[in-house]
Amino acid sequence: MEKNLNEMRSVLMQMGEKALQASRFLAVAGTAAKNNCLNRMADELEASESEISKANEKDMEAGRKNGLSGAMLDRLKLNADRIKSMADGLRYVAGLEDPVGINLSTTVRPNGLKIEKVSVPIGVIGIVYESRPNVTVDAAGLCLKAGNAVILRGGSEAFHSNSVLAHCLNRAAVLAGMPDGAVQLVPWTDRQAVGILLKMDKYIDLIIPRGGESLIRAVVEQSTIPVIKHYKGVCHLYVDDGCDIDMALKVVENAKCQRPGTCNALETLLINKSVADKFVPRFAKVMKKSGVELRGDSRFIAMVPDAVEATEEDFYAEFLDLILSVAIVDDVVQAVEHINKYGSKHSDGIITANLANVKYFMDWVDSATVYHNASTRFTDGEQFGMGAEIGISTDKLHARGPMGLPELTTYKYLIYGNGQIRT
Image (cartoon, rainbow, N blue to C red; front, top):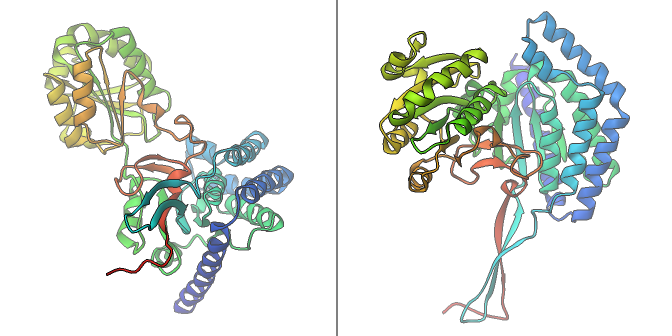
């Protein structure tokens, strides 16, 4: 066992060194070269459809034997349309503005020193993720466009799919003139490999985990490398007394029911007591029709007796299902207090025509994305115009909310002089 662990560590260190060397090349690669690489990657995916499909079927067969849910199997499945969609995603990223080399500021000091602050790649990024093989392509494409090398570690459910996808991407990158090592996949499903990867701070500059709360917490606990993360999405909407009830019903239904298993889906609804008599009966009817289980506080239970009594834990919960916690509140101040106590700093919104309440809500809610009269389901890189996203962060340093290309860069200072010395 120790021999296997040593071999694993040796291979991962070699991968780290290759990624580090590749990152230095990518940091100075021009926009045209990176775009050409992304387009070659897209062509390679489409040309390898049969190879990818065969590998994916191995994962699907294993998933069925292991009792994966229908939803999980659907996320795992790669068909011709999904392979084309992944390829088109790479082409879309190729068409986005290059985030590297942007002059963020210029200062000329009294002594004549010219100081420029310029965006640069982060370097080597490690992505630890679960289930969906499309993350392999999205992450590789975004990292490369931002001038970063990437080491990918996907979930065991998609191992065969991820292996073929990563091989196709790296093969295309090399053919496009990029260094071998720009895109690499950890070649084992063993969790010990993740433990080693998370200690490779000599080579890796940033870790981004994508998956459930347990995965993300495990990564944070083990990593000696900075981690950008969100543990869960406990998203709220507050229906204020100044709301349009028809609009509120439409927004709430979309936020909860369109895709309840996503991190930007609604998990808790807060209702102002002044609008409750008009709103709650219609709301309860809509939720019942959609098959949503309602878990309410005492004031809500008094209005909807067949609802389940909510526990304290329910208000902290990310259900990722057709379950919704509901509370009646006195005003916008109490709504904000509830959100800041129970929320996860992900996505929260207010539905109202009262602009004073909008301002108070947006100023005081401490979340990555704060909405007025819109569904929380819009917290998404594509919906924000970023193209594919690398993830959603509830951290405050250095990225917050949906992470696109600019969030995969940092900056450095370039100082130009003509012989100045400090006295």
